[in-house]
Image (cartoon, rainbow, N blue to C red):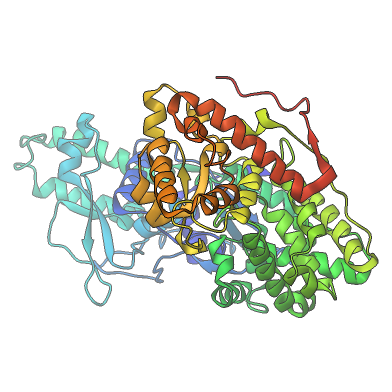
Length: 587
């Protein structure tokens, strides 16, 4: 990368020549008037306003892009003045660049100093500059804007105002300021009828406007031979909005309009709403295409940015529909196995499963018959201690395992899962992949509402604290223990609202008494077992565990039941113990 300095006139000239364009993956212009005024005020005070990041347009990297969001006219002359830059000497056309970072600032500068805002013109109030701005007062009230007429013209009879684009033309700016000084010699307090004093004050105004003409914006330009991965990394590092530039964003810009990936992905989500429910990114579809394409060509599957951005258009178009179908099936499969929208345990693992569904001739049996091998592999992956969202390389390894399982009937690797009662009790962070994995197992197990026995549908489910937060907080229970997964259970929304903060001792006692009266204690026992609630309602001491002073006893008993449920799913891959990574978080 190399750094240079552009004057505002440099920016305006490039904008007029359409030498600066915005890649389509960037958001549109969104700045409000107050933000624009603050930028202009900062420039007038020689404050730094950040650097601009540019990428040269080359034949190697072509991105679908749009023009700066401004109405730029040649020789616009609404007030009988030359527009900004007309007095500039003729220069060679500027090199073409994409703006990777800084479009809000560049667009604001162009709109203000080229009179290119679609609806308004910006002005500087000279009278307010003399009475406020030049007296050291903060504020942007000396910058104002006036609405243009229906033809896009801007005129004002207010002699205190000078239009911002006129300021960039030193000759016309001088004419306006001289007229203002002459016309207001006896009306401006700072002049007091004294021409020498007026000249001194107006020199200060000219100094402010000269800052606009001489202000230097640092511009960072990426080398012409930079690789696409480097460009992505640079964008993510420098981008002041914190927006992550995804591979799908770049692919949309690269391939448009054939194929129009943005439109294709929008149609995919409309056809398969589950993709929207789980907030699946369009990059997942490209990853499935890459995995399947590698499988068909006998290559090791890779889903790096470089791979996705160098796939041929024909490959994308030929595999796209199958990839979308595979993705939708994978997320429906995960939902049946307890995954909750919008945050499944691992998007990357599900992407590998989606590719499996595409390439497997037996995908119907794997998908429809609740394949125990696939389920065991899935839970072994998401219940790993310290698990994080799998990286791209691991995704390729996962798919390699699954493709051998599909084509050669070779079982995938079942990673050992080290867990015990203590580690289960201490799962409390909802963002933890292992928490999500065990949560999925619970949701897949508990099919009916704990208290009503009604079937729990995905659109009516909520997670309920068996021991309410308020009750435990009064007893000074640690927050991490309050939010322990052992204290959570899926219920229907109406049940969650009805129970609310009722103590578990009272709510379970009510149901036990009702069951005894109806002679259905046996059915209640079966329901408690299905909902992973410890103990036997026929035991006279069963209710004791629901007293707040026995909360830790309840947690431990329920963790034991959860451990048995995990063992049922993953069999001998479950190891009752811990690894070195099972250190508790500090209190």
